[in-house]
Image (cartoon, rainbow, N blue to C red):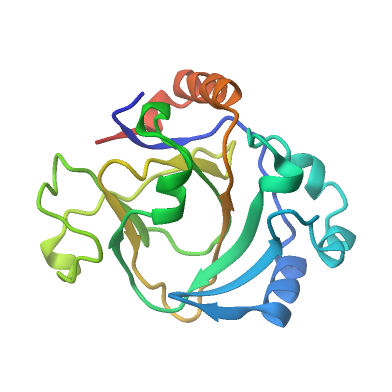
Length: 206
């Protein structure tokens, strides 16, 4: 488990309506680092009620993520990159959980019109990659994850390897949900073990 860099998660698909999601996102997006983003659930605050008007069951669905304190310690946002994301490990996600819990950074692919943009760089094929490596795509050995049809959730390990994302052509949209918060380690490990059994053919190891 501790050698897994990416694992699809055995949770039901969110299947957020495309048009409603884009309308909400485009009306509120702000630039933050490499992203246009909308922080729709700040830590210690509830989900934006305007988003719940569009998706009334979203709160219930997001509680399936094994956070230690969803209401007071869970941060959720939508992001869409506007530049290439260089190889990196997420510092906040890395700080929230120890390496012995395996992959701990939960994400949801809300919308991905084009494949082969998000990638991981296992140490086994990229032993000399560093944070924010500036080498071009041709000098990397990117591994592009494939998600099964039954889920749009995955969990990423920020203690192993690196990950990044190439910029999609402008005619395509790619929106990802990012989650931050301390985990209930028991529930998290139960979910990982279940997911490993169900999605063993999709796991990317370091």
